[in-house]
Image 1 (tube, rainbow, N blue to C red):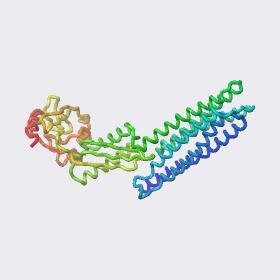
Image 2: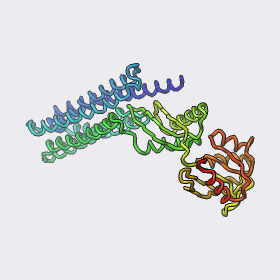
Image 3: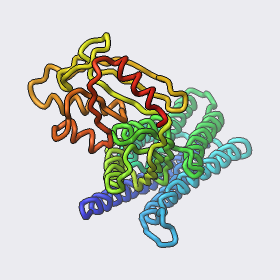
Length: 405
């Protein structure tokens, strides 16, 4: 537990440190662009300086959001993680404000471009790679820590690099007598609106509990399905809160023993945490399986349906599903035994292979009681039954005759 807590604190410290770097870089960019706009009189540079100035407030909001979201409170049992998402939305709104200021100045203010030296072009040129490199670093750190506000802030630096490129293009055009300053300012505004909209949509999806993608849910389902005691997955719900994930699962188990059911839920939770990073809480509802259908597995000596006298060395296995209401076979297939030639632990490997296909009952001519496969099936809640029948057809006839009794 202490190890987990120390890891959590280390992650929080790393995120806060990166956020402080972001603030310092935004301060430097805003100051440099403001000075250059005064020297040159460029409206595009002025607009870009406003952009970076708004980014300063965004970085401050980011830092405050990170500090607040890490606090625990009895009034907020699910944590304050969504403060980060609120911060990312605030950043998007500040971007919209930036775009408005840029367009307003481009359409209403009169500005004359002052003569400037080559050093101005060099300074603006340096403002392109620096934000790109830091933005990639910050987005990477945000993805590693699963921090939406850090990712949103890192994305803004890509916008800074793009707008700096437009400013450089406008200044170069001015040197050749092409008046591109106002056009460049409006293009910057359009790009800022696009960036703000993407961040706003992402943050709102989290706040509305609709942010967990299909791939993540598929990984959760696969982790649950790997638990042999699970007979059916009735529902999986997952939602983001900040950079953490809350998972709720509803499953049917083929076991009724409460102790074993609890152990199964612990295994499922562990597998979910291994499959999906940054899971804060997993809530598993489990209930016994309703017996509408029963799945059987039988070892076969050949594909024609002769029952094998041995379990581990059987070349094939038949899977038969009986519908208890209709008293009919609803599914039947034959599988090749991939472990029949193993020299060691053959029976255990075959038992684990069969559990992947979720049988409720394993019918054999060999007595599995006291053997490895028998223990594996018992732990998974799978019943083992002996039979003296010689063929699959005989077994199915007996099963149908006893269906519903």
